[in-house]
Length: 93
Image 1 (cartoon, rainbow, N blue to C red):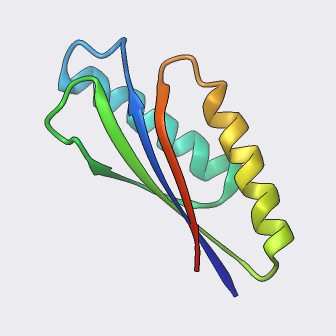
Image 2 (image 1 turned 90 degrees about the vertical axis):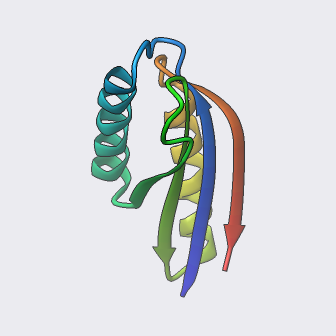
């Protein structure tokens, strides 16, 4: 079993309030979870309007499968127009 852990920091220029930020993040979390069947949680910058961080967990039996999911996930998030990725860190356990 291989576990991939992604730490993702992002800037959300459209967010003018915490309510707008939550709306954007909840939508993005649902899309990521639905498309990739991974665990997603907001893990930092809870009180900042335009900053956020996600922790994403992926479990697989094969490294090649995990690498494929990570590549598709990174492309998917990069195409999201409502956010700008400022930091992306992946660890395999």
